[in-house]
Image (cartoon, rainbow, N blue to C red; front, side, top):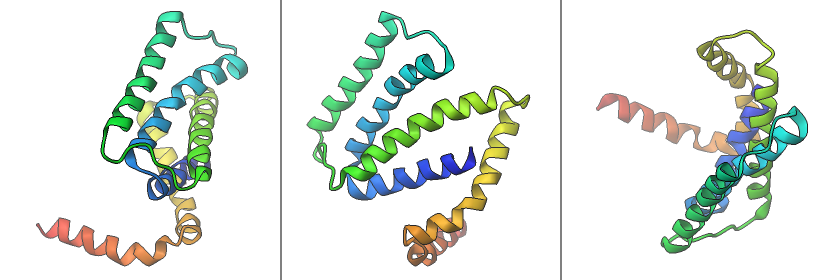
Length: 148
């Protein structure tokens, strides 16, 4: 579960580097559509009602209208990160729901558990994404924020 969480964060960062924020928002709004279908297909849940489907589609269309009307527009320099972000996030939503519903934990225990384990995967992703080069800048920013 934490590895999938870490991959989702990494894909989100890479998508933000390769696309506009508006594009990221549009792709994020597509996730509930895929998750609804995956819940039905793999977790034996009901499909959303017509009213719920209309609500989901309204959110997606609204995000697309917003993205098209903003100055950044919908822009993707590489579709790899956009598709990976979409699929990983949808998989994470369904898989985490499946795993965590089987374990008796409070909500906060789940959050702490997931975040603590995700820290183990953080260094390799920094290395893969060449983010170590920016670690000094991030540390300086945190020090400036803390100072005042």
